[in-house]
Image (cartoon, rainbow, N blue to C red; front, top):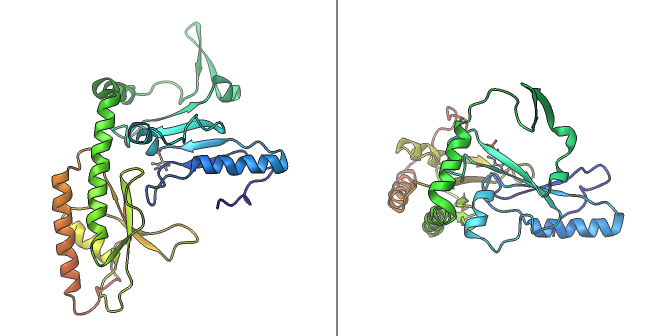
Length: 272
Ligand SMILES: *Cc1c(COP(=O)(O)O)cnc(C)c1O
């Protein structure tokens, strides 16, 4: 059940996330839209949706084509995505699209008089490198729709394999299994005498070269700690098997401890 208590006459829009940072799960855009329909019936407020498709915007069209999360949902007026995530290019590129030209407020567009011509621009003005756009364009041409579909499907298959293996381990419970974007998280089961936690496991994995962050969930769930894997192009099935082997050996090592790991000097989480 979607709560509607946060929407009132001051709401300028609702953002639905396709691929929540913490878990990789899709938010239910269609159900959010239906909840907004009910609010409109009751109050007359017509609230639009922006979809933050930073990751999912480059996954769903290729491997979940039947999922309606985009302009098929009529309350969705704008969608943003990041080229540097599942667009498969280096950092620094993302874009936003509006349903129709009229939906981008005129006041956001700068009209610059430049060397005798008028240049409308909705971007950072003036000299910027174009390399990022160029690589994205190249990747679209190089891989095409089917190439992207195959790359994303492979990441998806690897994520499902990994989550399946982790699900079978006694210490863990999956939060989700990577069937939305190829990202998933898991929690530690209760076990009275365990001498370690997910932060200790994170540190052990790091010694073997794997960066698998453990972190608390957001507000209202901060008591839950999860650990997350993000699968992208290049994380092959072979690497996934090697990871599972390392994960099992780290758990075995930690299970062999006779007293808890010291926690005072632990580096706090993950650093960009
Ligand atoms: C990564 C991410 C962002 C930020 O996008 P950038 O292109 O890295 O600035 C915003 N929202 C979500 C859900 C993300 O995963």
